[in-house]
Amino acid sequence: MSAPDHMKIERRGTNSALRNFLESEAAGGILLMVAAALAMVIANSPLYDVYHHYLHDIKGPVLTAKLGPMTPHLWINDGLMAIFFFLVGLEIKREFIDGRLATWEDRRMPVIAAICGMVFPAIVYLGITSGTPGPNLTNGWAIPAATDIAFAIGVLALLGKRAPASLKLFLVTVAIVDDMGAVAIIALVYTAGLKTTFLMGAAVVLAIMYGLNKSGVKSIPVYLIFSLILWYLVLMSGVHATIAGVLAALTIPITKTPGAPDSAESPLHILEHAITPWSAYFIIPIFGFANAGVHIGEMSASEIFAPLPLGIAAGLFIGKQIGIFGSIWLCVKAGFATRMTGATWLQIYAVSILCGIGFTMSLFIGELAFPGKMVEAQLLRDEAKIGILMGSILSALVGYFILRFAPQKQLHKAEEE
Image (cartoon, rainbow, N blue to C red):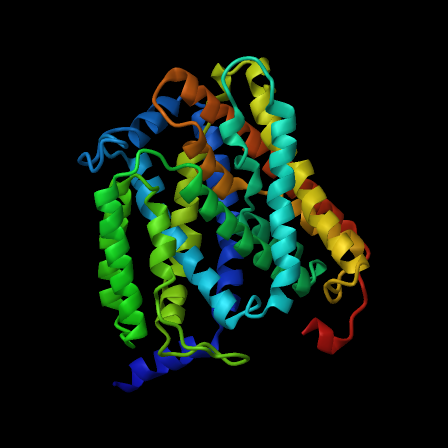
């Protein structure tokens, strides 16, 4: 190995994947906000037809009859997002094996908070949308259940040191557990018309990847080739292709480095360092740009404030803070867990509100909840986007301003570091 190559690996090893992740997600979250705002501006300008036509123009073959001819929109949602979910899978595995979720004692608070933060938004949504005349909106119950890590961390980044490090770590941990729930929902709820032949083929490929891991194989190209095959088989099976990204990631070998810099020989850490910038600076902003554009000019006030968008917005803004802050308060008062170091109750409440930023995952689930090319299905997806934007923006603004003006808890220098 040449000296420069060795130095590159050493430099990579001196930083943790978590530190790189937080830094990239913070900048990427701000970029996501810009991309989403740009999409809304274009979608409500004379360029809307160009924007819509390009995203839905045929740019590829028919990979599966369920999807039809591939378009840039499909390549982004079913292709690029599979890479994003691959990174999600890597983060989940790292945290459970060698991170802040390695023991049950560490998992208790974020797991309970994340579960309550998914259940209560769904309850609020169903309470508002159930029994309303028109199309059945029940299938959208999971839309307000997700938290967008990038967007939320981006908001915290704007606050600088006014957001204690313990709150940033707690937010990331809850969002990672939240992502696990979202992945499970996508796999179990928004999957129909399974083709068992391809599903069995995917299971075989997954078993091979698991066997390679157990056999000590650490060749990244080998795992990436099998991951691509797995993606195609899952796509053809009827399960959403992004699930393949999470499953493939769980087979990637990891070298434990508790309390030390990431191992330079750990395939999982190497891939996480390599993919994180692409996900934060390219994939997520592209997804936001392709999915956030709603042509409000063609929507009436009754459609903008219909039960569907109101249910989603209320679920994100009200349901999230009730579920997360309520569960934290109960756990601390019951002695089941301790409060985050250096954070006041008001700051914890503000971060619970920020968890109502469900942008990326909510948009993704919204596309799955109301599928089809009929005008009615498209209207429901547009209404869902309006609700996601309203709930996410309201959560971001309120959470930001509470944290901005909340009294700071004085810490010793060692605690701040």
